[in-house]
Length: 340
Image (cartoon, rainbow, N blue to C red):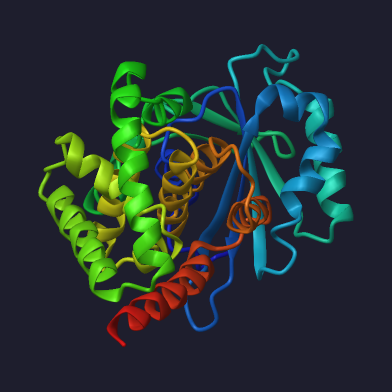
Protein backbone atom coordinates (compact mmCIF):
# COMPACT_ATOMS: atom_id res chain seq x y z
CA UNK A 1 0.00 0.00 0.00
CA UNK A 2 1.23 3.55 -0.70
CA UNK A 3 2.74 5.26 2.32
CA UNK A 4 0.65 8.41 1.96
CA UNK A 5 -2.80 6.82 1.78
CA UNK A 6 -5.50 8.97 3.36
CA UNK A 7 -6.80 5.99 5.37
CA UNK A 8 -5.18 3.00 7.06
CA UNK A 9 -5.27 -0.45 5.47
CA UNK A 10 -7.76 -1.78 8.02
CA UNK A 11 -10.01 1.26 7.61
CA UNK A 12 -9.89 0.95 3.84
CA UNK A 13 -11.20 -2.63 4.07
CA UNK A 14 -13.86 -1.62 6.58
CA UNK A 15 -14.91 1.25 4.28
CA UNK A 16 -15.93 -1.07 1.43
CA UNK A 17 -19.60 -1.40 2.52
CA UNK A 18 -19.94 2.40 2.58
CA UNK A 19 -18.22 2.69 -0.80
CA UNK A 20 -20.58 0.13 -2.35
CA UNK A 21 -23.71 1.27 -0.50
CA UNK A 22 -24.40 -2.18 0.94
CA UNK A 23 -22.63 -4.91 2.92
CA UNK A 24 -21.25 -7.37 0.35
CA UNK A 25 -21.47 -11.10 0.95
CA UNK A 26 -20.38 -13.98 -1.28
CA UNK A 27 -18.53 -11.43 -3.37
CA UNK A 28 -15.26 -10.50 -4.98
CA UNK A 29 -14.41 -6.81 -4.65
CA UNK A 30 -11.62 -5.02 -6.49
CA UNK A 31 -10.58 -1.65 -5.04
CA UNK A 32 -8.20 0.70 -6.81
CA UNK A 33 -5.99 3.22 -5.05
CA UNK A 34 -5.32 6.21 -7.29
CA UNK A 35 -2.79 9.00 -7.28
CA UNK A 36 -3.98 12.59 -7.00
CA UNK A 37 -1.18 14.99 -7.97
CA UNK A 38 -0.26 17.23 -5.08
CA UNK A 39 -2.30 15.28 -2.53
CA UNK A 40 -2.45 11.99 -0.70
CA UNK A 41 -3.41 8.76 -2.42
CA UNK A 42 -7.11 7.94 -2.19
CA UNK A 43 -9.47 5.06 -2.70
CA UNK A 44 -10.71 5.08 -6.28
CA UNK A 45 -13.22 2.85 -8.12
CA UNK A 46 -14.60 -0.09 -6.14
CA UNK A 47 -16.09 -2.92 -8.19
CA UNK A 48 -17.99 -5.98 -7.02
CA UNK A 49 -19.05 -9.26 -8.64
CA UNK A 50 -20.60 -12.47 -7.31
CA UNK A 51 -18.10 -14.85 -5.78
CA UNK A 52 -19.37 -17.74 -7.94
CA UNK A 53 -18.65 -15.73 -11.12
CA UNK A 54 -15.17 -14.91 -9.88
CA UNK A 55 -14.41 -18.49 -8.88
CA UNK A 56 -15.59 -19.95 -12.21
CA UNK A 57 -14.01 -17.38 -14.60
CA UNK A 58 -11.34 -15.46 -12.68
CA UNK A 59 -9.17 -14.40 -15.65
CA UNK A 60 -12.10 -13.19 -17.77
CA UNK A 61 -13.55 -11.41 -14.76
CA UNK A 62 -10.32 -9.56 -14.04
CA UNK A 63 -9.95 -8.55 -17.68
CA UNK A 64 -13.47 -7.09 -17.54
CA UNK A 65 -12.87 -5.23 -14.27
CA UNK A 66 -9.52 -3.93 -15.47
CA UNK A 67 -11.00 -2.21 -18.55
CA UNK A 68 -12.07 0.85 -16.60
CA UNK A 69 -8.79 1.19 -14.72
CA UNK A 70 -6.24 1.45 -17.52
CA UNK A 71 -6.69 5.20 -18.03
CA UNK A 72 -6.53 6.00 -14.31
CA UNK A 73 -3.41 6.74 -12.23
CA UNK A 74 -3.74 3.46 -10.30
CA UNK A 75 -0.93 2.94 -7.80
CA UNK A 76 -2.30 -0.09 -5.94
CA UNK A 77 -5.01 -2.74 -6.26
CA UNK A 78 -6.67 -4.66 -3.45
CA UNK A 79 -8.89 -7.62 -4.19
CA UNK A 80 -11.12 -9.06 -1.47
CA UNK A 81 -12.63 -12.53 -1.55
CA UNK A 82 -15.58 -12.25 0.84
CA UNK A 83 -17.19 -15.64 1.29
CA UNK A 84 -18.09 -18.19 3.92
CA UNK A 85 -17.12 -20.96 1.48
CA UNK A 86 -14.66 -23.29 3.17
CA UNK A 87 -11.14 -23.26 1.79
CA UNK A 88 -8.16 -25.54 1.74
CA UNK A 89 -6.18 -26.56 4.81
CA UNK A 90 -4.92 -23.01 5.22
CA UNK A 91 -8.49 -21.71 5.29
CA UNK A 92 -8.21 -19.59 2.13
CA UNK A 93 -10.84 -20.49 -0.48
CA UNK A 94 -10.56 -20.33 -4.28
CA UNK A 95 -6.76 -20.16 -4.24
CA UNK A 96 -6.45 -21.36 -7.86
CA UNK A 97 -8.89 -18.65 -8.96
CA UNK A 98 -6.91 -16.04 -7.03
CA UNK A 99 -3.67 -17.11 -8.75
CA UNK A 100 -5.35 -16.82 -12.15
CA UNK A 101 -6.74 -13.40 -11.22
CA UNK A 102 -3.28 -12.11 -10.24
CA UNK A 103 -1.81 -13.27 -13.55
CA UNK A 104 -4.67 -11.67 -15.50
CA UNK A 105 -4.17 -8.30 -13.79
CA UNK A 106 -0.43 -8.45 -14.48
CA UNK A 107 -1.17 -9.04 -18.17
CA UNK A 108 -3.35 -5.92 -18.15
CA UNK A 109 -0.33 -3.86 -17.08
CA UNK A 110 -1.80 -2.88 -13.72
CA UNK A 111 0.09 -2.73 -10.41
CA UNK A 112 0.71 -5.99 -8.59
CA UNK A 113 -2.57 -6.68 -6.74
CA UNK A 114 -2.86 -7.73 -3.13
CA UNK A 115 -5.52 -10.41 -2.72
CA UNK A 116 -7.19 -10.85 0.65
CA UNK A 117 -9.71 -13.22 2.18
CA UNK A 118 -12.39 -11.93 4.53
CA UNK A 119 -15.25 -14.22 5.62
CA UNK A 120 -17.64 -11.33 6.31
CA UNK A 121 -17.71 -7.55 6.73
CA UNK A 122 -18.33 -7.46 10.46
CA UNK A 123 -16.31 -5.88 13.25
CA UNK A 124 -13.70 -8.31 14.57
CA UNK A 125 -13.58 -10.49 11.46
CA UNK A 126 -10.02 -11.53 10.64
CA UNK A 127 -8.67 -10.97 7.15
CA UNK A 128 -5.71 -12.80 5.61
CA UNK A 129 -3.51 -12.31 2.58
CA UNK A 130 -3.16 -14.97 -0.11
CA UNK A 131 0.38 -13.92 -1.06
CA UNK A 132 1.88 -13.21 2.38
CA UNK A 133 0.84 -15.50 5.22
CA UNK A 134 2.05 -13.07 7.87
CA UNK A 135 -0.07 -10.23 6.51
CA UNK A 136 -3.30 -10.42 8.47
CA UNK A 137 -5.45 -8.24 10.67
CA UNK A 138 -8.80 -7.63 12.31
CA UNK A 139 -11.55 -5.60 10.69
CA UNK A 140 -12.69 -2.52 12.63
CA UNK A 141 -16.39 -1.66 12.81
CA UNK A 142 -17.49 -0.73 9.25
CA UNK A 143 -20.16 1.56 10.70
CA UNK A 144 -17.52 3.77 12.35
CA UNK A 145 -15.28 4.47 9.35
CA UNK A 146 -14.90 7.93 7.84
CA UNK A 147 -16.54 6.61 4.65
CA UNK A 148 -19.60 5.48 6.63
CA UNK A 149 -19.76 8.87 8.36
CA UNK A 150 -19.52 10.67 5.01
CA UNK A 151 -22.34 8.51 3.65
CA UNK A 152 -24.52 9.36 6.64
CA UNK A 153 -23.83 13.09 6.29
CA UNK A 154 -24.76 12.86 2.59
CA UNK A 155 -28.05 11.16 3.49
CA UNK A 156 -27.05 7.75 2.12
CA UNK A 157 -27.77 4.49 3.89
CA UNK A 158 -25.44 1.50 3.93
CA UNK A 159 -27.91 -1.33 3.40
CA UNK A 160 -27.48 -4.77 4.97
CA UNK A 161 -27.24 -6.52 1.59
CA UNK A 162 -27.48 -6.08 -2.16
CA UNK A 163 -30.94 -7.63 -2.02
CA UNK A 164 -32.06 -4.73 0.18
CA UNK A 165 -30.77 -2.36 -2.48
CA UNK A 166 -32.71 -4.23 -5.16
CA UNK A 167 -35.90 -4.03 -3.10
CA UNK A 168 -35.76 -0.24 -3.39
CA UNK A 169 -36.41 -0.75 -7.09
CA UNK A 170 -39.53 -2.88 -6.66
CA UNK A 171 -42.56 -1.68 -8.65
CA UNK A 172 -45.55 -0.48 -6.63
CA UNK A 173 -48.83 -2.44 -6.43
CA UNK A 174 -50.29 -3.30 -9.84
CA UNK A 175 -53.66 -1.78 -8.96
CA UNK A 176 -52.03 1.58 -8.18
CA UNK A 177 -50.16 1.61 -11.48
CA UNK A 178 -53.31 0.56 -13.38
CA UNK A 179 -55.31 3.37 -11.73
CA UNK A 180 -52.68 5.98 -12.51
CA UNK A 181 -51.79 4.93 -16.05
CA UNK A 182 -54.76 6.63 -17.84
CA UNK A 183 -54.07 9.85 -15.91
CA UNK A 184 -50.40 9.69 -16.84
CA UNK A 185 -51.26 9.10 -20.51
CA UNK A 186 -53.55 12.14 -20.55
CA UNK A 187 -50.95 14.32 -18.82
CA UNK A 188 -48.21 13.06 -21.15
CA UNK A 189 -50.36 13.91 -24.19
CA UNK A 190 -50.79 17.49 -22.97
CA UNK A 191 -47.08 17.78 -22.15
CA UNK A 192 -46.13 16.47 -25.61
CA UNK A 193 -48.34 19.10 -27.26
CA UNK A 194 -46.68 21.87 -25.21
CA UNK A 195 -43.26 20.46 -26.08
CA UNK A 196 -43.89 20.14 -29.82
CA UNK A 197 -45.39 23.66 -29.93
CA UNK A 198 -42.40 25.03 -27.99
CA UNK A 199 -44.85 26.46 -25.46
CA UNK A 200 -42.19 27.83 -23.13
CA UNK A 201 -44.56 29.37 -20.52
CA UNK A 202 -46.30 26.01 -20.04
CA UNK A 203 -42.99 24.12 -19.96
CA UNK A 204 -41.56 26.57 -17.42
CA UNK A 205 -44.59 25.91 -15.19
CA UNK A 206 -44.01 22.17 -15.45
CA UNK A 207 -40.33 22.61 -14.58
CA UNK A 208 -41.28 24.75 -11.58
CA UNK A 209 -43.60 21.98 -10.35
CA UNK A 210 -40.77 19.46 -10.68
CA UNK A 211 -38.37 21.73 -8.78
CA UNK A 212 -40.99 22.25 -6.05
CA UNK A 213 -41.50 18.50 -5.75
CA UNK A 214 -37.74 17.98 -5.35
CA UNK A 215 -37.63 20.62 -2.60
CA UNK A 216 -40.57 18.91 -0.87
CA UNK A 217 -38.79 15.54 -0.96
CA UNK A 218 -35.78 17.14 0.73
CA UNK A 219 -38.18 17.92 3.59
CA UNK A 220 -39.54 14.37 3.61
CA UNK A 221 -42.76 15.05 1.69
CA UNK A 222 -43.42 12.84 -1.33
CA UNK A 223 -46.29 13.46 -3.80
CA UNK A 224 -49.33 11.35 -2.92
CA UNK A 225 -52.21 12.80 -4.99
CA UNK A 226 -52.95 10.96 -8.23
CA UNK A 227 -53.16 14.11 -10.35
CA UNK A 228 -49.86 15.45 -8.99
CA UNK A 229 -48.09 12.11 -9.48
CA UNK A 230 -49.41 11.80 -13.04
CA UNK A 231 -48.34 15.36 -13.85
CA UNK A 232 -44.79 14.77 -12.58
CA UNK A 233 -44.40 11.43 -14.38
CA UNK A 234 -45.56 13.04 -17.62
CA UNK A 235 -43.34 16.10 -17.22
CA UNK A 236 -40.24 14.00 -16.61
CA UNK A 237 -40.96 12.10 -19.83
CA UNK A 238 -40.29 15.28 -21.80
CA UNK A 239 -36.55 15.01 -22.60
CA UNK A 240 -35.69 18.68 -22.11
CA UNK A 241 -37.54 18.82 -18.79
CA UNK A 242 -35.76 15.69 -17.62
CA UNK A 243 -32.44 17.14 -18.81
CA UNK A 244 -33.09 20.29 -16.78
CA UNK A 245 -33.09 18.27 -13.53
CA UNK A 246 -30.45 15.70 -14.53
CA UNK A 247 -27.98 17.75 -12.46
CA UNK A 248 -28.41 19.11 -8.94
CA UNK A 249 -27.29 22.17 -7.02
CA UNK A 250 -26.27 20.19 -3.91
CA UNK A 251 -25.79 16.65 -2.67
CA UNK A 252 -29.11 16.94 -0.82
CA UNK A 253 -30.91 18.01 -4.00
CA UNK A 254 -29.26 15.19 -5.94
CA UNK A 255 -30.43 12.56 -3.47
CA UNK A 256 -33.92 14.11 -3.36
CA UNK A 257 -34.17 14.07 -7.16
CA UNK A 258 -33.13 10.42 -7.19
CA UNK A 259 -35.63 9.56 -4.44
CA UNK A 260 -38.42 11.38 -6.29
CA UNK A 261 -37.57 9.54 -9.52
CA UNK A 262 -37.66 6.17 -7.74
CA UNK A 263 -40.95 7.06 -6.00
CA UNK A 264 -42.55 7.94 -9.35
CA UNK A 265 -40.95 4.95 -11.10
CA UNK A 266 -42.66 2.56 -8.70
CA UNK A 267 -46.03 3.98 -9.81
CA UNK A 268 -45.38 4.29 -13.55
CA UNK A 269 -45.84 1.93 -16.47
CA UNK A 270 -43.71 1.87 -19.60
CA UNK A 271 -42.68 3.90 -21.49
CA UNK A 272 -42.70 6.43 -18.64
CA UNK A 273 -41.00 4.16 -16.10
CA UNK A 274 -37.84 3.90 -18.19
CA UNK A 275 -37.35 7.68 -18.24
CA UNK A 276 -37.59 7.80 -14.45
CA UNK A 277 -35.21 4.87 -13.97
CA UNK A 278 -32.60 6.61 -16.13
CA UNK A 279 -32.98 9.81 -14.10
CA UNK A 280 -32.52 7.84 -10.87
CA UNK A 281 -29.50 6.02 -12.33
CA UNK A 282 -27.77 9.26 -13.35
CA UNK A 283 -28.14 10.81 -9.90
CA UNK A 284 -27.09 7.60 -8.14
CA UNK A 285 -24.00 7.39 -10.34
CA UNK A 286 -23.08 11.05 -9.84
CA UNK A 287 -23.22 10.72 -6.06
CA UNK A 288 -20.93 7.69 -6.22
CA UNK A 289 -23.46 4.88 -5.77
CA UNK A 290 -22.60 2.69 -8.73
CA UNK A 291 -24.54 -0.30 -7.35
CA UNK A 292 -27.81 1.67 -7.20
CA UNK A 293 -27.13 3.14 -10.64
CA UNK A 294 -26.59 -0.34 -12.08
CA UNK A 295 -29.82 -1.68 -10.57
CA UNK A 296 -31.78 1.34 -11.82
CA UNK A 297 -30.45 1.21 -15.36
CA UNK A 298 -30.89 -2.58 -15.52
CA UNK A 299 -34.63 -2.03 -14.98
CA UNK A 300 -34.92 -0.06 -18.24
CA UNK A 301 -36.53 -2.08 -21.03
CA UNK A 302 -35.78 0.29 -23.93
CA UNK A 303 -32.07 0.80 -24.58
CA UNK A 304 -31.50 4.41 -25.62
CA UNK A 305 -28.27 6.30 -26.30
CA UNK A 306 -28.30 7.56 -22.70
CA UNK A 307 -28.81 4.05 -21.34
CA UNK A 308 -25.87 2.77 -23.42
CA UNK A 309 -23.74 5.64 -22.15
CA UNK A 310 -24.52 4.75 -18.54
CA UNK A 311 -23.90 1.04 -19.08
CA UNK A 312 -20.54 1.64 -20.75
CA UNK A 313 -19.55 4.15 -18.08
CA UNK A 314 -20.44 1.68 -15.33
CA UNK A 315 -18.54 -1.13 -17.06
CA UNK A 316 -15.52 1.13 -17.53
CA UNK A 317 -15.69 2.44 -13.94
CA UNK A 318 -15.70 6.06 -15.12
CA UNK A 319 -15.32 8.28 -12.05
CA UNK A 320 -18.57 9.86 -10.82
CA UNK A 321 -17.01 13.34 -10.99
CA UNK A 322 -16.43 12.91 -14.73
CA UNK A 323 -19.99 11.72 -15.26
CA UNK A 324 -21.33 14.64 -13.22
CA UNK A 325 -19.42 17.11 -15.41
CA UNK A 326 -21.21 15.79 -18.50
CA UNK A 327 -24.68 16.00 -16.99
CA UNK A 328 -24.09 19.31 -15.23
CA UNK A 329 -23.34 20.86 -18.61
CA UNK A 330 -26.40 19.30 -20.23
CA UNK A 331 -28.62 20.49 -17.39
CA UNK A 332 -27.29 24.04 -17.56
CA UNK A 333 -27.93 24.15 -21.29
CA UNK A 334 -31.49 22.87 -20.83
CA UNK A 335 -32.30 25.49 -18.20
CA UNK A 336 -30.78 28.30 -20.26
CA UNK A 337 -33.10 27.33 -23.12
CA UNK A 338 -36.10 27.82 -20.83
CA UNK A 339 -34.86 31.27 -19.83
CA UNK A 340 -34.57 32.59 -23.39
